[in-house]
Image (cartoon, rainbow, N blue to C red; front, side, top):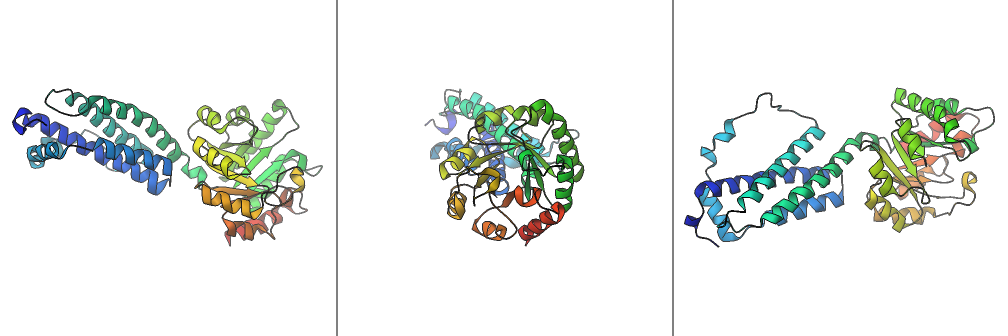
Length: 353
């Protein structure tokens, strides 16, 4: 390592300031990922980067400390015109990401000084990595308001389950009055051209009442109606592909029956996981029954919100929640009930209790 005299004091001050700025900005982003989003993958990425980038030879660290002059730094008292003191979290994420990226760029250039024994390429690679990580963090943050609605009752309006004479919009109106927080449109019969006006009406109704609207299977229909999200099965478009095609503020759910499927869905960018069938169900006679044990195993394997589905009624909803579900999805027990609003309210109150 070079002696203290071989590196200009001004250069040491620049390196020291930018290492500190980098560490502070990255720590803020890491804490958001860990404490706000509860995202283990992003937290680990931030932590590894922070430890790797701040790993400095002890003798060089001593040189940096000797050169530090925080009291004489004129930049501390200078504020940019119009600089805000209070900002929303997405703006703070972008601001701190810029802070990290700019610091890495300065360190990358300073590391090219022959006497400075730092790896310029390492800082360059970290700078490119933070672009991708910032996008992932920001996209999850922008979906938090929607994800927070998922613990409420999730109603699937399946065209095949509708009692003759009942329309999608009438059923949706009643379940909303009964306390549903999320409505999913599922239709395996109609063409997308026929479904589009139905989906648009449901989207408008849900938006008016602050209820999430999810489209099952069809990414193009979800995009065309500006739905809050898309739900996919194991035989649909892969979660990772759909995540890249969807706007970053839209949520994505995935149906699973096994622990491996749930882990894969989480790693590929799903925001919630549907687990089922919990009990035998008339809505999907060929569905595999995973039972409460299957739900419990998946709960232990992933951190995403779990929506239990399949044969759930007001009589068994409580035991499903006790095993680890964050909510339940219901079809027949509500859609085919004589009094849809009351049936919805009974299950919703069970979940709240």
